[in-house]
Length: 165
Figure 1 (cartoon, one colour):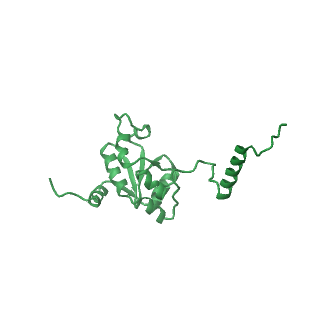
Figure 2 (cartoon, rainbow, N blue to C red):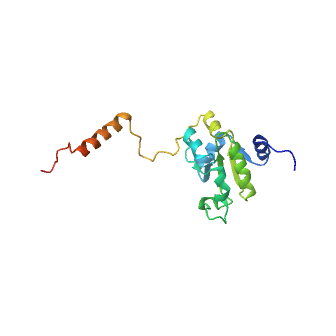
Figure 3 (cartoon, one colour):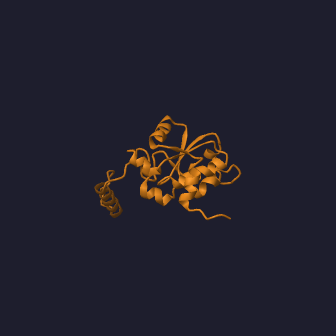
């Protein structure tokens, strides 16, 4: 067996056969639609940094299992080997290794955002919090939370007069 490879060496080798997209190129493809965008970072990483709007989180450790057509935990969204997939992560390294694995599994249109989520942000595009807020639901301000708690406390104490007497 040859010399052991570092993470960076493995990523560098994988880049030789993985399509790399600039954040601008990725944004154009995402805007057109028909692309599956996956962030392969760990959930704690997404909670810390956020992710690209519309990205699904499938960790690098789960991606190959979810993409396998014979695994019980296969993901129906990953069964079409011809679909367009864009991968990202914090800086692009894990996404590049994940893309290499998907190519080995027969996927034909897999690419990676150069620089990952950091590159996306440097290009001026926003990240959204993870998990993404439910559409139409906005977090309460501190004052609103205090008012809700006060109302709940008053209701428990029976401080509200009944409107039906």
